[in-house]
Amino acid sequence: MVKNYYKEYSVNLNRDMEFNVYGYAGQPILVFPAQNGRFFDFENFGMLDNVMDLIDGGKIQLFCCDSIDSESWSNENGEPRYRICRQEAWFNYIVDELVPRIYNISQSDKRIITTGCSMGGTHAVNFMFRRPDIFGGVISLSGYFDSDIFFGGYCDDLVYANSPIKFLQGMNYDHPFVDMYRKCKIILCCGQGAWEDEMLRSIYRMKELLKYKDIPAWIDIWGYDVNHDWNWWQIQFSYFIRSILD
Image (cartoon, rainbow, N blue to C red; front, top):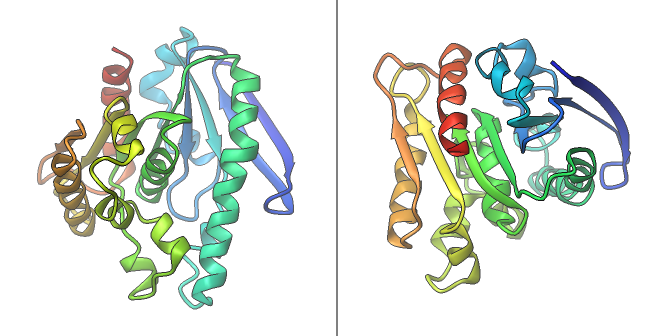
C-alpha cells in the first residue's frame, strides 16, 4: 500500500496540520476522524483492512485529516461563540487549504466523497451539505446531525451553519443547493445497538428532511446487534464504498 504523510501550516488555524494519504489513484475520499480523533485513527482502528484491494488497485485514494474537536464540539465548558468560531476556522482550513491539496496530490477531476464514523460522520455530512459544489457524496456511519447535544439551546449564525438538520429544515425547496444534493451520492447508516440511540433519532430526522425535499438518499438502519463501534464501521465502510463506486 502506498502511504504518504504530510504536515503543513494552516493560515486559518495558525498551526501545522497533519494528514495521511493512502493509495496512489482513484476516487478521492476525505476521511474525518471520530470525536477528538487524529488523522492516523482510520488506519489504526482497522478501517483500511477490508478495502485494501481498492486502495492497491487504484480505485480509491483516502485523505485522512486531523480535527480540532477538543476546541469546538467537545469543549463543553468553553464559551459557545469561541467554540463555534474554532469550528468555522477548521471548516475554512478544510475547504480552502486541504481540498486544493487533495486535488493537487490526486490529480483527479472527480468531486471528493466525504466519510467518517461517529463525529467523523457528523463532519462528513456537514461538509457535503454545506459545499455540494466541492463534495459529490457522503458515507456517514453513526453520525449525529444537530448541535443540541454539544451546544444545548445555544444557536447563532455559525452554529446554524454547522448543523445540517437546522439548515436543511430552514432551506427552501427551490434553493439551488437542493438540486445539487439530488445529484450527490448520499449514504447515511446507523445501527440500533449500544450507544446508537441519539444517532438513530438524528438519522430519522435527516430522512424526513431529505424526503420532504425529494433528495434521494440511502438511509440504511442496521440491526439491534450493531453497536456504535469500530468493528461494525469496518464492515459498513467496505460495504458502502464498493456500492458508491458502482
